[in-house]
Length: 545
Ligand code: F0G
Image (tube, rainbow, N blue to C red; front, side):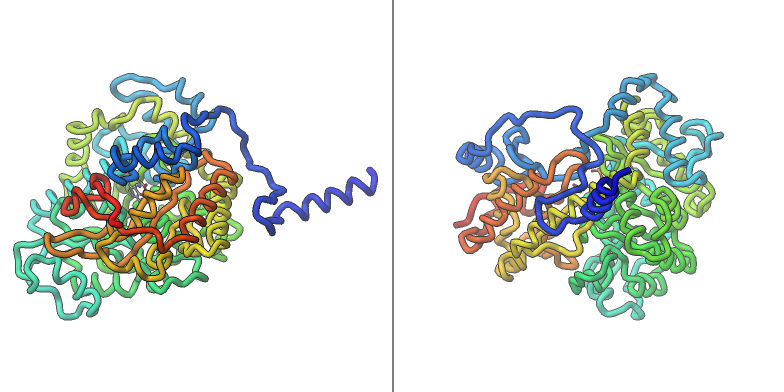
């Protein structure tokens, strides 16, 4: 072999990770396009988009027609995945039998492979008395069933404690929980139960509130302090959790942890944090559950940043994450790499089933009443096959490197233009801090400049989502109540396997134009829906200036 080949191989290898300059990559994507979709519109149709946005959509990004977006649709990474050829092929093999179709057994086997053998009992009859995997058409349906049955079982058991909060609570917890517990003095009649989490997603928050319980976000201090050097900003604050359980254990039926922490900035959670939560919840005998939508992305960050796991494969790290919990719900529209699907999984021999003997039947009844037979849970047989296949792909190292690397480059592109993004960038999305974008001017609650930002970016040709003072705040009839803790982000969520870097660079350029003229961005007036629950999905706005 000539010296020249060896020389160049060394040079090529050296160039592999050379990402010094934007747009210069040696390393190609680990996949290529097999099907493409042409756009139905042009980037030049600015006036047409403005007319649709103002007249049809009331400046609400959710209400804007997707076929009129010529650029990147970054409204959500949920259900927007481009599926692999293996998934499309698996769909052909979908079995549409009404009960116990092949997909159910395939998926149950795959759950055991992905999350650990203890989770699914192959010997159990489908939907039968020892099953622990409950299928739903998407994540929020699983949340709804879980919190409905939990509320019913707690009330049957006469659990909970009304009255004032214990004086031993940390002042910041007292301050945050007190006003939400019935009367301002904590008098009985209001919500009794509290569901803590690192941060609940909006639908989880909605489902918990709908059952008269209090969702409580306990993000770690380093996240709140905007510590850009901390790789696990998704962690939960253990001191606050421990204090809550020490003094109000009877009001906490379950502790939640969202991986990665979507509401908090898409940030990962460390195994160390999970172990600590496990210790504390064990001590106080409270079940510990994951909202596990982005489990594989979370595992990738653990491998990268937690020394103990540097040499451990992604599949093993995933199973390690799930060892510590009593159950989880999952939207399979994210790391299931599927367009639809959700599940609730509860440890067969766990406390929840022991403490509430009616729990399992309660969940199964809800499946039958609202979703279909437990063996398909609101999904077509072909969906089940696509999910099973997606779960095999999502833990591939090459896939995750490409996926998370792309989101990181997108975030770095915005950062280079001086756009204040939440750093380090998380796994599925880039979050722009709207308060900082407007140099603090957006901190005036009530003018919702994050909504104006999303509206103008739509006119530019790209769709992102406000997850800030509008989505997470509320209006009590007289005044705006900001999110607790206060966050004011616009999120650009990147669909999986869908866009190329060049597409995302176009978003960076559009945001740069907005940033260059940020003083010309007006606030918005809410025309409809300010007092509604889950208002950001339904509201209509107009530009205020
Ligand atoms: N939990 C988290 C952390 C989520 O991000 C979502 C959905 C859900 C639960 C609900 O799952 O959509 O299948 O009902 N998040 C999407 C998003 C909608 O855009 O972040 P679902």
